[in-house]
Image (cartoon, rainbow, N blue to C red; front, side, top):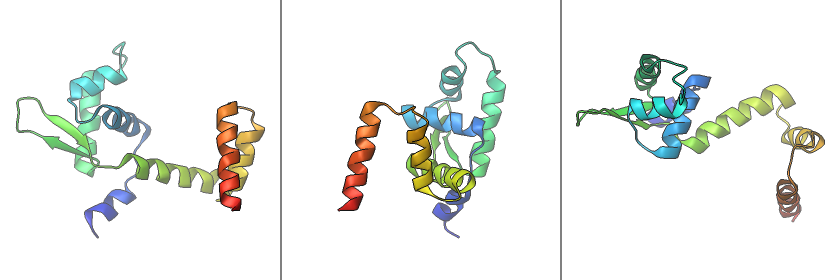
Length: 129
């Protein structure tokens, strides 16, 4: 099994996903930066963030550059692939795999902006062609 195949099987926990979001947005970062980004009021201890990131490194979700005094962590999971995996799992579990049912539920919920609804209409027209 290749490294990419192994990474496709990894499903981040909520805490791990929070770390990944910071790294995807800001690029390679120190634990301190990730911790401060996630906990502006220091609700969670630094050592908790450190431990989560160490576990993620062991799982193959992050890489750690130890060449400097500060260790720099980078995501090994691709943002779009990870999001797509979560979306597939959600659609499968909540809508029996039906993307159409998901879209109907989104539109029926009334939470979409006019811009988002316009975009959906454009996508539907594109699919019909």
